[in-house]
Amino acid sequence: QVQFEESGGGLVQPGGSLRLSCAASGSIFDIYFMAWYRQAPGKERALVAGISSPGITQYAESVKGRFTISRDNAKNTVYLEMNSLKPEDTAVYYCNAPNGAGRYSPWGQGTQVTVSS
Image: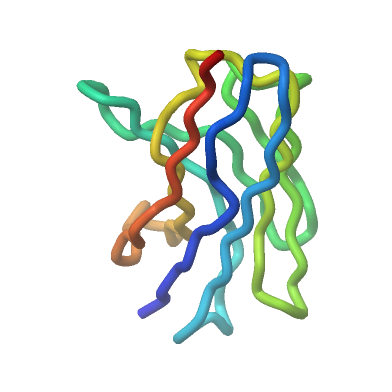
């Protein structure tokens, strides 16, 4: 199994920026796709951005042009650069690496992002 440790969240004003990090450990040798997800109060967890091993990215429509996902394969770490943050970006952010069958590894603790003035 793979374990994830997310960090970098915090309180930021609207229009501000944050950079999240996620370090993967454990059975990481076959990780192809890594992604960030978020869960706001009362809502289901949803995909924010994903990146494959060769660097192909995908984004939710709501964050396109504002968020950038990247990964450092040597460090087994994935990042999420978040700019022009909005109150609706407030959520707990998680990372995970679903396999080809769509099965997730155990979820980490996540990191809280709060966008508020």
